[in-house]
Image (cartoon, rainbow, N blue to C red; front, side, top):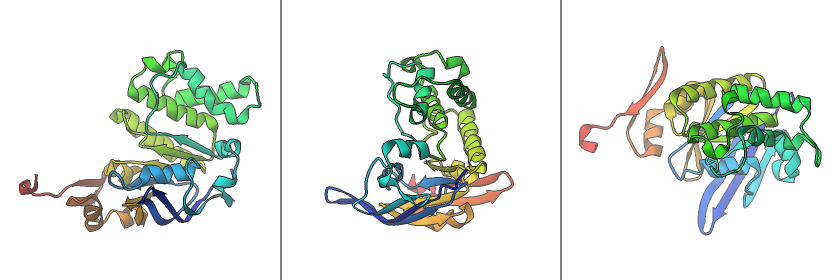
Amino acid sequence: MAEMVFDLNEISLLRGNRTVIDNLSLHVPAGQVCALLGPNGAGKTTLLRLMAGLAKPACGQVVLGGDDVYALSAAERAKRIAYVPQHIPAGLPLTVTEFVLLGRMPHLGPFSQPRAADRAVLDEALARCELEQLAGKRLDSLSGGERQRAAIARALAQQAQVLLLDEPTNHLDLRQQFRLQRLLQTLAAAGHTVIEVLHDLTLAANHATWLALLDAGKLVGYGSPDKVLEPAALSRVYRWPLAVSQQVAGWQLSSAASTSML
C-alpha cells in the first residue's frame, strides 16, 4: 500500500466576512489515527471537508500523497479518500446491503454489476461493523447508531487508503464506540491514514496517536497526546478549567471547575 500522507499548506477559507480556517498548515503522517479536537465552531468539520475535496480553500494547498486533492477527479478521490459525514439521512429508500455497496461504485465501471470480489468486500465491511443481521433492513427502519455504523461500513467498502470521519461516535453506544476506535487503530496499523473529529477528549487521548487542536480556525496544538494534552492550553481553548492525568488505565480528562463556577 502506497503511503498516503496529508499535507495542508497555509490554507484559509472564508464564509462571507468570517474567516473559518485561518492560514492553517498541518502534516498528517500515514498509518496514524489523528483526532481533530476543539470547541464548537473551531473549524473541525470544515477542515475535514477541505481534506475530502468537498470544499475548496480561498488560498493554500491540500496535498495527498504528493497530489493536489482538487486536481483529482471525483472518481480518483473516491478511490483514495472515504468520507463519513456527521449526519446520515434517515429517509434513503435502501437496504443496508444496497447502501454499503455504494462504497464499491468507484471500483465499478458504468452499468457494472457487483462481482464476487465486491460481495466479499461487502461481507467483510458488514461483519466489521456488526451489521450482518441488519443487512436486509431498510435504512429508515434503523436507529441513529445503526445508520452510523452502516455509513462506516460503506466507507470501509470503498477500500480507500484514507478514512475521514466526522464525529463518528455520535449515536453509538459505549461498546460500539470502543469497537470503532479499535477498528480504526487496526486500519492505521495496516497503513491507512485515519482522521476523525471527536468531542470526547478522553476517547481521543486514549485511542488516537496524533491530536490536532483547533480554535477559531487556527491550529493551536499538534502532535502526540502527551504534547497536546496540556491543561492550560486545553482550558484556554475550551474556555473551562480542565484537569489532565495519565494513569495506568490511560488518560483521564475532567473538569477542574470549583462548585462556585457551576
